[in-house]
Length: 633
Image 1: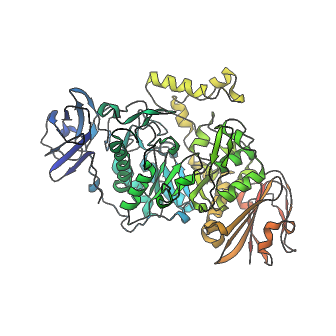
Image 2 (image 1 turned 90 degrees about the vertical axis):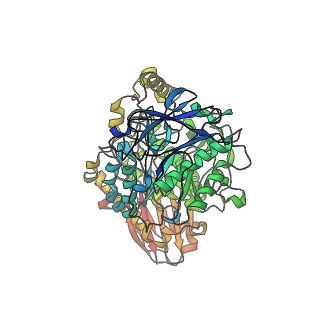
């Protein structure tokens, strides 16, 4: 069983307190009146008291305090200054500036002893934000909807960051207590109940973690050590973490221990590491390689998956360390999303400048996993990407929507808010039937009416700067070049911005949302049950542009029939597969229609393509955007 080396953890001897403060001369742990805390067990401490800690050669201070158990609240005094929360706190019941609470993770009774995780080949991810996923906005609220996600056909949920942040609402990327679940979502055991319940239903649970920066309010790492942050590597969010300078071994250990904490104390099945391109590490062994090895070497009784969010398209991310890589299991590959938006919604500003929006480029992205393999990027003004040949397709995470691609839009509008539902259904079929690992964002499965906006709850001074900065960042976009238009961008500090981002679950039983959800269920069922759609090697598929608006996808397996998929993403038109070389490897079969995205159960106003199966290959006349899926026996 993994044990922490930092923070506070109780056992039969009392509670162990340990914190790294290499330049401090003295530290005291200040214990509060634990007898007044609702979750306290037994304590001999009746009044706040200070207990001196002993400094070790590695710069850590530690002490064991008998009589203090779970529920005890404490802070640290550093060289006689302040009362500061624990940088490795397991819970902040009064907020990020308040006392830390001693948590006993081993007291939770798990029921998932038979759970072995999920294999990458079976992964379908459903990303959600705890605060806006349900009206309650809590871990318990998520539990209430797990069965609906199982029925949908996803195999894992991914929680946006839950590390505690200032205020009562936040995306989670302003987290400052990296080991403490946000108190507005519930207590630590509430999060454990969520993971345990998901495992009981066969769902894996992934967690988004942020190791490239900390939030601007409540970040006390610098109080304990000046070595947490780099003096040489800046990032968009301020100074980078010190991963390669003096004393960096302790900083690296802090984040590796955090990863192991979530995976062991909460039984998470994997982590998504935010913006790994901002983890500046020029040392001999990259942090990602060290972290990947630590996680995969330590957890051997179940499958644990690690994903990088990284725009560089580096094969290094997912190659094993023995081949010079960093050993991650997968990477968020945004090129697919950008190609789709450029093609269907016409986005052409910002990073969309790098995309032509042609069907040929979209097909190439599906085929390769990402599009940029070393070409010059206009947006980055440098070459971008490496050749992904040899990387299994499941290692690429593709999406039509995610929190960034919706929430970083000024109005938080989703893809289906900008294109017609027929095109959205066809694009959905392309995502779910492609060989990459699909990621859905909450509400996508029923074309939710609600936006997902950027929201915060900072103090007034910082909040005003956030509001002004949010509106200013869109000044170079044509739609918001007018100051008055920018003033109309929802204020991230307003509670109404947060409330309007909450899903309306009643929609799943209303049209047109119910029809869209039935399509998602049907496609995910096919992905799970058709051997060709479940195949996960590069030899099992081909993708080709048929014309300026249609893509052909051929999926095959040694244990089942070939699947032909035609996606007409814009307008109507006729596709004659007898005239395309991509089909010649699957000739001599009898074709039958499995489904089209225009079947009556999937849309309120069906307009099914006309499919002629009399020849060697189908001829399809599309009346509007749609997808056709055929099985060849």
